[in-house]
Image 1 (cartoon, rainbow, N blue to C red):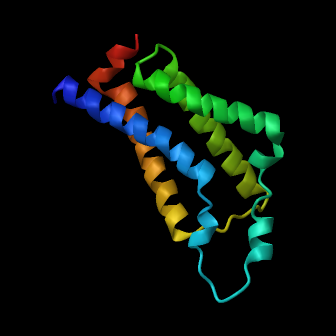
Image 2 (cartoon, rainbow, N blue to C red):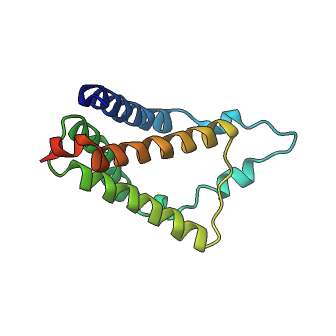
Length: 139
């Protein structure tokens, strides 16, 4: 496959992943949940995540790392792949800890679709960054 085409695909996926941060930050996904029952107490309980218990400082650091890593990936910075992997693994660790402590989340189908899509996109970004001819651009 043409390396220029791969590069355009990779950069488009990085931009899409970056833009999804703003969707998560500014769009309340709970508006997409329709139910005949009052889910307010359940929605309040679902926000008790280890990720949120890190405090404002931890959340800001994670958000800054996410904001910084995407431009670094876009411009093929030397250590951007490793930082991206670290962030993805850190988020997976938080999710595993939440699950092991019996925490749960109540999500709309729209949020679930976005979560799955972004997981696939992040996986494709990692695969292209490590296992395609683009890997040589990161050196």
